[in-house]
Length: 410
Ligand code: ASP
Image 1 (tube, protein in one colour):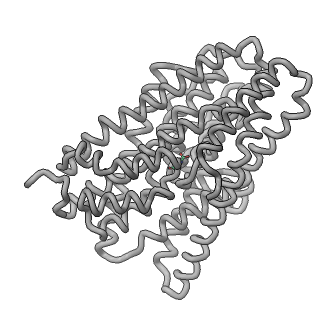
Image 2 (image 1 turned 30 degrees about the vertical axis):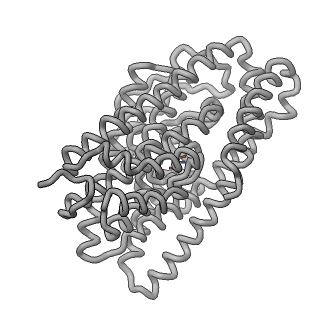
Image 3 (image 1 turned 180 degrees about the horizontal axis):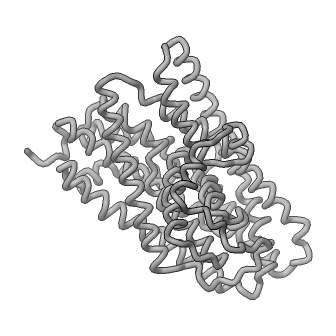
């Protein structure tokens, strides 16, 4: 991974400033730069299906099989799914209370004419989950179906003989590595993408600039507020009352991986440090860390899940779309799936926003709006992702009656 993070930040910041100036002062030049944003968004869309497919298959096949593993898998998945859902609900409540996107008048080219009535019903969600033709689902970008298929496919890889299982597992691990590299490559072009998209939006909405900047700031505060609540209230309560351990002692043990997650924006890159801190500082056994953490780094992303939900709701608000209860439930489900499918690399969460937007029928163009602040939010949500993985390891360790260094005496 050869992008130095500081550099990318600066590049993005400079691109942003230039884009605002360009869009404001030279609107007639937009046709010459707007295409960069389009190509960037197309690139993100290009990687999404193979990235999700390989990320999930590789994660699920690493769960292994056997009695112990079966029990550990169930506990770990239960923790992962429930904390991610809790994070999403926290985000949903905040974004509904604060409504950061309401009142922003944007001249988006696409307007949303009442979303299809059927988007929310349970039957409809089930229909989307189970494709009648997986190739067609991939071609159409029906991501829920692809995620569902990947989970099933990954699971049944673990159920076949080793001579079939091993090559398949290696193959999908390899595809996943390649897809992560391609995604990082595309992400290097973020400054150009931002320039194209933001310049066009500024030119279109030059009279609304202060308004947009204000609501972006409020949107960012909603994400940050939600992340803080999840990291400093919800997860510590779980550690305290379910794992019966000392959350803040555990937190101080985890400072190195958390700061690394913050500065690299990558749960996967932080993984070795997370494992080390859990084993050598918080005293969780290698058996538990080596099972829960690699899986957690790919599928347990509480911070990303919260972010997906707040971002999608914000975009819906900006488009002036009131989501019904059922549609918001769909946002919760898709944000959860998006966080499961997101790879542990910088800005993967941004790629996955397409999943949620597509599911509720909002135009992908809305991503342009939040692109400018994504990088900084990524640092925070990645830290929360890693923090949740580590709390999960402590919780599972406790349920296996392990004596850790952070547990209260029984
Ligand atoms: N960067 C995050 C991670 O590695 C994923 C995301 O973009 O939300 O955990």
